[in-house]
Length: 270
Image (cartoon, rainbow, N blue to C red; front, side, top):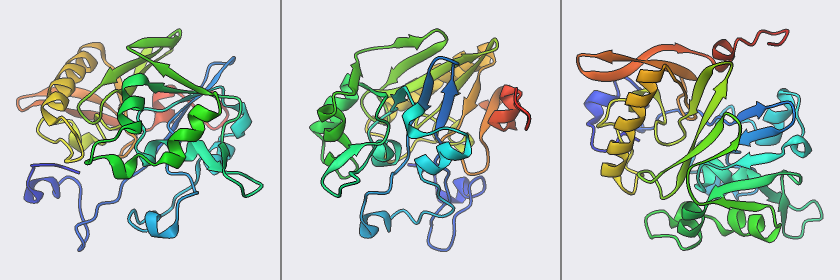
């Protein structure tokens, strides 16, 4: 998870157990515009074998449908399924086994599934480094359903909801930039898996083009600092969101907070 950074450094900030394993979060994000209900990423899903899932040691894991229900939504409510990239932990929940036991069906029957064209072509013709995470059963049903929509560049799918493409982690990863009440939230996906990955050298070994990641991180961090964006972390077990601060060692995580705190959501609503 930390690439070339020595364990003696990263474990001070993100502890590992005796088997060298770290605990990570796997968050999705719902954006309800009043007219549309947009979901960003959908987790592993539950259709893979125990052997396959045994590599991930899931704990306290809710499936995407259970998570939606806790927030008051049903799969049928989702109108737009934005998939940052097609690694199995980000897209596996978008397709499920058919109720009749024959083949697969879409988890979100009323949604368009938005993926970048570059990532789609990268995934269906996988390189040897990533092919184990591009599972055909996660991909082909999306196209066969007619619900797949490919974007070819940076785009705004709704006012204030922009999708920008990045290539360091994997070709054509989407990073959503979401405006809300005059503020901007960046769904950091695997560009910044956690607050620990904010320092430039902290780049995952999974990234196919780490020097491109380095450049992309530097550009986004400067933009986010200059414009007071908040970062929303998909994988950080300890922090949901943060602002940034400039330090003598470079841009680092500043104040941390929950998504509800950032959005001003209380138990009674907004």
